[in-house]
Image 1 (cartoon, rainbow, N blue to C red):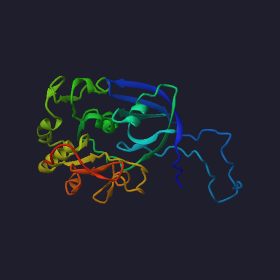
Image 2 (cartoon, rainbow, N blue to C red):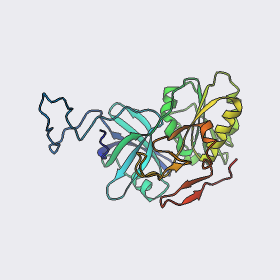
Image 3 (spheres, rainbow, N blue to C red):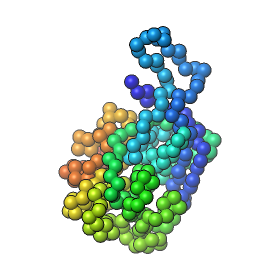
Length: 287
């Protein structure tokens, strides 16, 4: 049985992007740490039952999955894994509320609790295009590293919000105010990319109205799409129902979904549950 208690991990690297976003890298080794408080297995060496460990190895990571980051005495929030290296795990956080702001303000040497990774990640296809909006770039960053030849369309509101431009210098950048890259949205350039017969898959994460447009453009072009969604989550294991969308649990059935499947969902790009369990409408018109 999987042990889903948070494990305290030390922040070993911090990278800031403008005033709103930061990437935190934590130590996250794949071997059980030693602990003088760890219980001794009640099973003798000849027992057919496996010994119990309170610190199981980190499960294999699939791009698109997320972890829960716990700040003791404050709260716990889900964040996409933006990089996974031997012994290290990175999450990228945008200051959107008091909890995310407190986590983003943490310094090297401080500790946070981590559990996961959770959810269904991306199914990998090398002949792809990657479309990202805002902090959604974090969820697809591992894909960009895996498929460096893939075209990447990345949109932000303004130059000051851009992130990971040094890490991924070949991204095609769009800004709503035209202060960097091209004026407009990543979806403006997507139809031309989809006309390339070599493109068999589009991966996308970002604002939900943008994701709906990506899914529609892909459907019209006859190209498959995989969409990573964000919803308010509490348990991350499909139990509480806080992240439900048309009967689908985003934390367990997603967060990555088939784009054509999402276009059949009445809640997609239209409404979501907030932390109180009330329905709130998403910004922008459903296109």
